[in-house]
Length: 255
Ligand SMILES: [Zn+2]
Ligand SMILES: [Zn+2]
Picture 1 (cartoon, protein in one colour):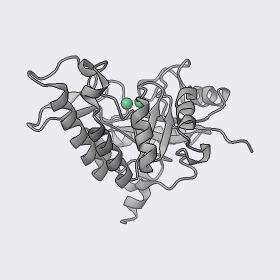
Picture 2: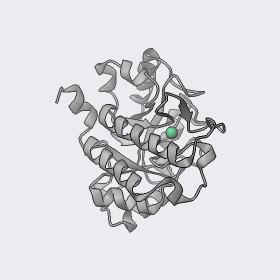
Picture 3: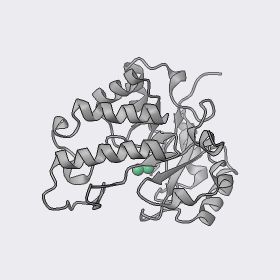
Picture 4: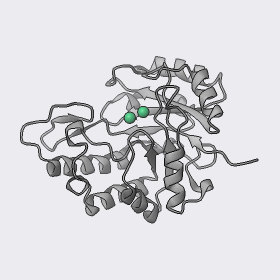
């Protein structure tokens, strides 16, 4: 059987995607990838799965289709902490997202807000962001960190070195390594190559994700796959929920 990549991150109408679960699956297969659905499970996203009961319904639906069963959980929201083990076990893989981070004074800074707290510099923000990522990697039972280079809107497009110093990159990939969490190469929020190379050098596994929300986007992982290959990563070493053990299940097992 020929190897086919997994699109570990795509959205359906259960959260903010435009396609049904069946359509996400068909779209992925048409693009030659193994499809998964990873909808938002959080109380702090506009269109989302916002309760344990709704999460069960979502998994019921995914189990009716030939798709891998993912979920994208906001680190800053408490819903992931409330899911009972029997629900957690039904996911093939879980994705954590830093859609918001706390500053040392407790202020929440959202990734998709255009407003910044007064006086916040890129450097202050990034120090808080990395500290939050380190806490995330220690505490959150997930297999993948989504779009690891996503920063708050006002700082996107800033000079790379104002945001991602080599020291900050190293702290992030060290945290993922120790947490056994894969680094997502997102087609939607594309990481710079230097940090992906650093993740590879550290021994952090890579995961491919379209973060697709529409028919045009779902299953589109040529760019992430090309980058992984260019960095010398073998196809079979890319994160595959059906092959690689899940950190989540280890946690539940009490190890
Ligand atoms: Zn996200
Ligand atoms: Zn997403």
